Structures are given as C-alpha cells and as structure tokens.
Image: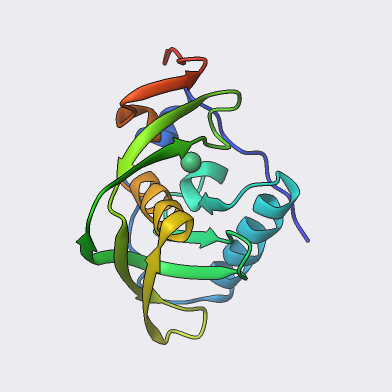
Length: 155
Ligand code: ZN
C-alpha cells in the first residue's frame, strides 16, 4: 500500500500532456495500485496518474460500483449532455457545474493488457471524462459553467 501526495492546482505537471503506456510492466501495475490506494485514502471517486506526478495515461475510477483501472483510455463514443457538480482532489474546496456527455463508451487496456470497452452513464461517465481530461492537462475548472464553491485562482 502506497499513498502518494496529490499535486494541487498551480503545479505545472497538472497542465502537461501524459504519454501513452507502451508496455504493461510491473512499474505500471504498481502505479495502478498506488493510484487506487491514494484515491480511496483521499477519498475520491477517481484519480489520474499526473495527479501523483506521473505523466502516463493511466486512470482509476470508483463511483461506488467497484474499481475501474484503465491504461491508455480513450472516449470512442459520447452522447447527450448533462450539467452536474464536480470537484477535484487536486483543487480542494472548489466545486462547479460542468457539462459532460451523458453517456460515453471508453476503450482502454486493463492491467492484463486486455482491451476493454466500457459503456458508462451518470456519475460513472462523468468521472471517466474528468479523469481522461487530466491526461491532456485539462482540469474541470476549465469547463465550469457555474461556480458552486470557491472559484480558484491558478498561479
Ligand atoms: Zn480531478
């Protein structure tokens, strides 16, 4: 079990683009474990590798229906739109309403290198979109249409 420090707004790493994983090594498996440990400890419903300082395309999500681990995740289909509240472990104390696709299909590799396709809706779809955005240096505050709590200032 390894809990990592979660980088917060203002850290330039959060604005960088993460690199695809070329090979699933023991290092990547450890990264998945550490991401899940850190997410559950926080606690949060999702975490992306750049949030613990690793610029690789790896995310974990658990909205209460079990852990999803994805390597090189991609949104391959998105339909509808829903505006809903979001926060981020990297931007504590801030909440805002963000429009997201209501339903998404996400494709990525699991820890065994098996290609998985996940159809998600509601909070699960929202969390997947939020975490995948992190891999491109995009934060939810970039997409907020209405602030609910503490509009942050990025330095
Ligand atoms: Zn986040």
